[in-house]
Amino acid sequence: EELSLQKRYDIIRRRRARRNYALLNEGYKEEEEEYEAEEEEFQSSWRQQSILEDLWKAEYNRQLYRKLQEDIPEREHLAFRTDRLADVLKKALQKEYADQNRPVLTHELADFENPYMMKRSGMERLLHEGCVRNQLDERCLPRLLDQHPDLTKLRRQAALPAEVLEPLAAFRGDVRWHFDARERLSQKLQAANAALQAIESDASAKDFLRVLPENLVDEPPAQQVEGIHHPWRNHVGFESAVPRGVAGGTKFAQPETELQSQLARLRYPTLQRVAHTLPSDSKWRAHVVRSIRVLERSKNWDYSSKLNAINRIKEVYDRLKPSDEYTAALDEKLPVNRVSSRIKRKYARDVEYVKTFPKNWRRQKSFTRYRPSLTATASLKKDKKK
Image (tube, rainbow, N blue to C red; front, side, top):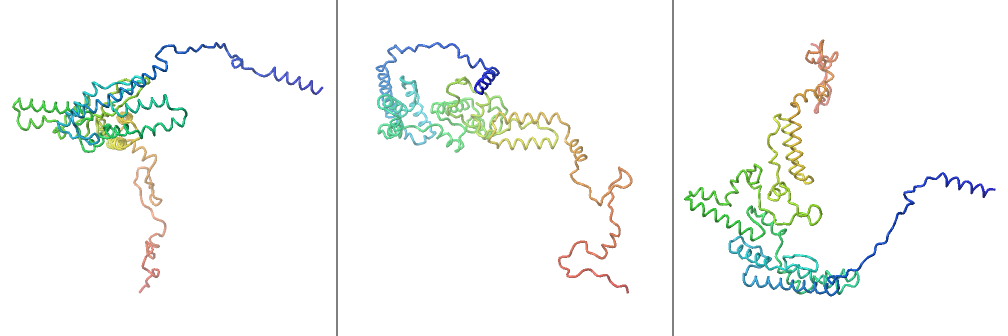
């Protein structure tokens, strides 16, 4: 009987249980056939041929740079080039000829300007394809490449990147400079052309000096930043050659915003562009100025958010009443300076405060000191009447 009763309870519990039929439905599954790649480009022979082709291209690029260094001699690669026209012209010619004849790796599409990186990439793919057997070999592969003699020589001859040279030029105070020698050569030729035009137009010595770009630093034009009234000195510098943007995704190859392009040229991204048309009220104006000074030194805000914050503050204060009204209302409801207990109002609401004293206060002060003495050794004594 107990077994049948327990069985009956189990049946009742199962009937009352709520079933989620959506989870019970596994759906229809159809196995998809996987076809092997039958094109000959996916065969091992083609892969080996493409890797060998990349190695040949890397060696060709190395010989190309060696030939350019022999034909157009230049200073050491690790030495910071001077800004003379002769040095800039040599580097620009080398860069132009190297770009015209630089190959592109085909096994795994890649484009390297540096012979060291091109050869390292080709050798890494060759060793990974034919020599790597397990994870231990894969971990030892970078160390093996770092100790290779050819790669060590190429790494020593490699040019310094923009991330190294641009901070040095900015610290030196250069505002007309570019990491790319071709762009720098274009700047120099434009300056020479402007000087020749000034000489041709019979300009005075003062006008001739004003035309030179290096003298525009002391008297910059108001429109030195396109679309913004920016007449301040030492704010605009050279344009950085460090790659920006993203590689892949929905934002790939999209042009950067106007604000980002302006920030790329600013040495000191201050908030001068919004420090105008401040509130006329002195208290509101001081608050906006203080906010500008704080946000200029804040590192946790992006530049666009700073501009929006200052503009919003100015809009709010323009719609508020003068600060005197708010100050008077707060002083009335929340007085900061409380009235002393000895100062009371007499007879009416609008009468000024009157200072009151306790009973016999004058008599008590006649025989005691107002404050405890620091030098007295005895209390005051009442003089006897004569």
